[in-house]
Length: 384
Ligand code: MG
Image 1 (cartoon, rainbow, N blue to C red):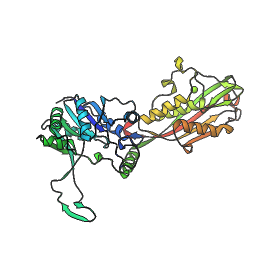
Image 2: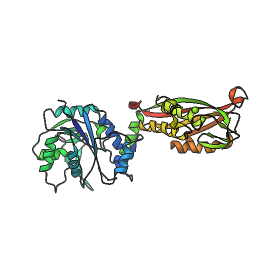
Image 3: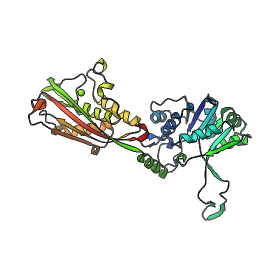
Image 4: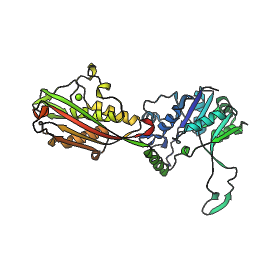
């Protein structure tokens, strides 16, 4: 059975039990939006041919920020209730099978998807469930009667359906009633819903403590990477240089295809090195006229964006500028502040050092400036 499968992610909620101002699907965990985690998990599954995201009206800009340049089959605007949102998504669904998923469950093991799709071979619907481990009881101001756990399960998403069956079930559902999930709608229409083993990883993020726990789980999967960068530019005629993202008046300039900011070039190479993604020349070839005179902060932020796209974060950068002139000391704070601004980091994570080579070598002869940099980042293990 290799029928196309649509993943329908419901991300239209505006609730904020998470204690944050943004709807929880747009909050960031591990440097990536909760919704983007869900999109990536589904996109990585080979059976899934289409991803549809349902957002609330007016959430378009939040979606763009959350998912960056990830490819979606379509973006659908949801309705007043979750069920309306699902209905709108089902209208856009092209797959013959559909996985309806809540964006607030960012960690979806591929094995659960495998089990759900396998179950659809024998039933019109399937849901992941987990047993209830705790004692269940009615509760208010005081404890009420215990609810027997036998035969009770926690129902998760994604919930998998043959598309025609779930469309038919939603059409038959009394529009005045809200449904807790799609399996309830399908069962009400008489469809048998199979169960498969769910996963604790699929627990919904709801409260602030859920986000703290999710962040910790992701941090445990982060791998630290350190890389170095090095660059040299020679002096030429001119009246100032770009160094570390700032303009320093000088009786000479630095020669180069771009603005020749030797410090930012070394730093850019260090950042690219942490993700093993070539060097500055790979991405901005000096043979390409569009980079003539280019401001080097573009190269630096490009490298930082590449790290962010992989869910990585920059822990620390360390830059050493080697020259006899100009004196770097008076500009150190400005360079540090500028690099912190460009990388979106606190200044405490930026180290700027300067040295001479005791008049030895090309820097000692005042023929040019050299810079070396080190960068330390943490990356999700799966994205290295
Ligand atoms: Mg260079």
